[in-house]
Image (cartoon, rainbow, N blue to C red; front, side):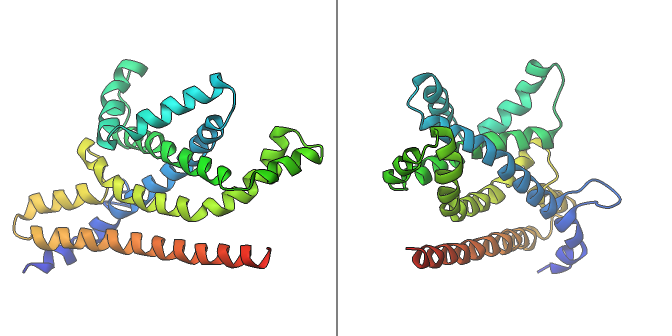
Length: 231
């Protein structure tokens, strides 16, 4: 076994060439996941609410977006954004920006379904009571329905963040210096420790995802206790 290869390159696995060079490794994977889930939240929130609309002109564009993206592999979206960018914008997008755009668009479709399910999970009487108090539909949704449903969606958002963290490994295919690409570079330089290198990669992903999953479970228990106290 050649664990010295892992030890000598552990900093490269964790943050790449930073601070002397660009950020990479596990740190880059986490940054991509954080920015991805942040952007996806707003797209998903808009698309989820649009899909709940009774107006077909509002509902159908969101439905098409959600169903098409959910039926498309993430790797295909990454290729689309990376290779179509020069045609659409007249210049090539950096690999990290192409990957991030793909993550936002892809995850946004799943967040939209989380939002839709969260809103529909509330009793219909909530909206009726809000409208009966004189609020408009938009006001009732903003001040009554969404605050309650978003609180219930938090564990699902965290789980989606866990999935996105693992999905960032696909960005290596277009040259983003995230954890998987850095590990592949080290493996190509050494040739004698692929098992040790990729075991280390698996352990690093597991640590991050296990921490997030544990946080999600604690949040879910806290929300359940909060709901039980307020019944």
